[in-house]
Image (cartoon, rainbow, N blue to C red; front, side, top):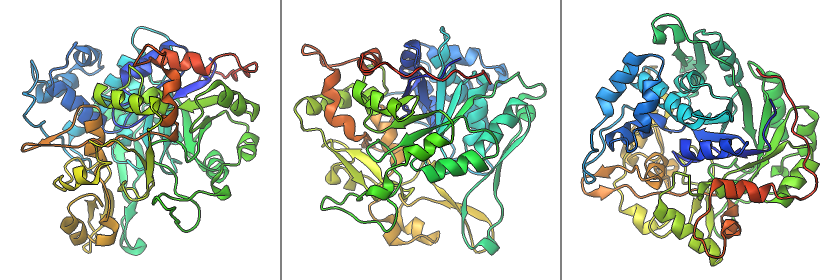
Length: 485
């Protein structure tokens, strides 16, 4: 097989869902599903009644029918729940997650990848965040059951993941070290565990090891992963600070400009020459969605580019039609703006927020939100004085966070990304009569989305994006041929 030229970014919560990944894959490029919060996404879509029956169709292909039956019994609502009623809550991820949550996590990742790959021979990837560690093993197993072709991972240093993929492909039990805050002497070694044979109650289906691409922001990190990972790293996505979602913090002390955004300098520009010297395929991400930027990336030795923002607002993405229409209109009028917020994310990473008035970007809109943490995917594990492990999130109620050893300063300005990102795709929770406000994250390329719009159209497709990027500039560098894993 050959590596693709274009990688569609694995964005947000269900922005890069199976319809978008499938549309990109059908065009011969790498369609990617976001693995973030997929258990919650599946549970809520089943509660909405599974319009079209796609989720139930995928679950009928799940290798363990009894698991699929339990998932449906727990979450499916025929005809859908009333629109003004809240979703039933999904258990928060922990080191000792219940068998039901593990089954839901495996099934959710299987469903998303299965539907993205259904009916064609294109390649599909799964994007996960190193910062969200607790569901990772079950997520990888579920995606591999569906035949995922690539796993992409950033927002941290995913050194353990290549070896985990090797072990899962052999049907072996796996462990993943979990980051725990606290004094080293008093902090127990915490490890998430997953046993495919126990999950499958015997024989594990034959699995293929997917390619692993690490998302990096520096040559130093790429070198570390290439040399010190637990298994083979098959390539890199090199992401600059113009990309959407979480950005790597600037090197050195944090400095802000007049707008309150982090200031990036020459030290923050990835050294592409050193990355090229590693001899592995790589793609460049962040405002690289034109023929000229693709050609420039390939002249530097890249296989191609990763594109997020352009796909995020195409017809097949998960963002609600309302937010798509608003954003495209702003781009057309030259008024689309994005703010790199150094505080919004509980992870501590800068986070890009699209400035839409009826979203979290409006301080008044967010200040009226009851502060709570009821999903918990960005919680940080920490050691309590008695040596046991608990979890805290800088976006949870400040009093709770402080009682768990956090500080008021660390909670200042933090936003609930879990709930906000779900609202962006129409899966927001309702608390009493209060609906969760959305938070829309994009890259700086949002200002140029109008390039994909025909004069008489107000929308565009994933195929339109690919067609424009692959327009004849200089002769495209031939994609590197690789042996199938």
